[in-house]
Image 1 (spheres, rainbow, N blue to C red):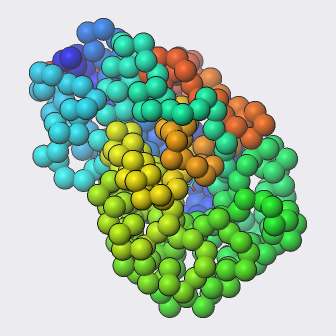
Image 2 (cartoon, protein in one colour; image 1 turned 30 degrees about the vertical axis):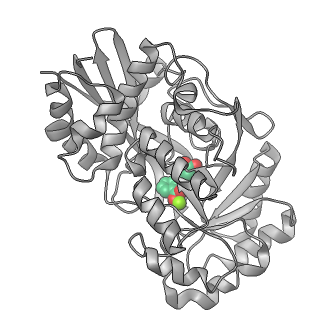
Length: 368
Ligand code: OSB
Ligand code: MG
């Protein structure tokens, strides 16, 4: 198909509570949405880039800029656009995977809606609901953390992930274990906050039976993770370092990780995310679906991805109300710790016009 045009929407959604990680605190989600229009309909994409380049080099203003000046014009020039061709059409632009992923997601949505096929079916779903975990930010105190975790446990979440950083690691983990017991599925995420000189401190996490420690060292330090793995018993899971199926294969071959967090935006799209899944499955490496404070659009696609057979650990696919009081789509609601995989065409959800208008701060239309 040939695209008729692309709309870029900037939206701003307040978070229900501040979300603090080792790289900063978010109070509000600044987001970039994409709507592609084709002769037969439309499709929606969500760009996961954050407001600031502190998790990854991409950030929302940069993503909008590269879309407007490079990526969207390339798609509008192409005579034959399909989701499977998007990466190839955009390949002359280096990097910018989150921006490319959002465009591919929108094209895939448009294509699947036209074919009356769901994301889940197209990606190779193996189940109609997925168990959900929740990512818990760094708190001001241990009692506050215990309160917040208790709320999520009561809500039914199947797994808790604690954000950690030097000064907020062993004590919170010990407190959560003591309060909620050894059966709680518990993991931690450092977002690159440690170095190899922290081996003694990271070894102190070994006794707590964590499922995994996510991305303790910096993004490019794959070999460092392999070295760290020789000194700690907690399995290492990579997030930031995994930017493609090839980088996943390399990290596994080097012994840098035993588990992989798959975020479609970080690897350039849902199709590459599927390939990361396949590479990991071929190596017997469990994967789980990460999150980037998505709206219902990205959440719908993530839940579909998380229903693939290799996703054997609960992901950061929490309910809409984990981050937002009002979602822009029908909300995802937890049911016995699980979310239902949307089965309608494409994403299976669409923005509610009034809810979208409420949070939209800027729109631009691009056509040839
Ligand atoms: O490292 O997984 C991460 C949010 C923003 C950026 C990076 C990360 C996260 C989370 C939240 O942990 C996951 C979610 O959306 O639930
Ligand atoms: Mg992470």
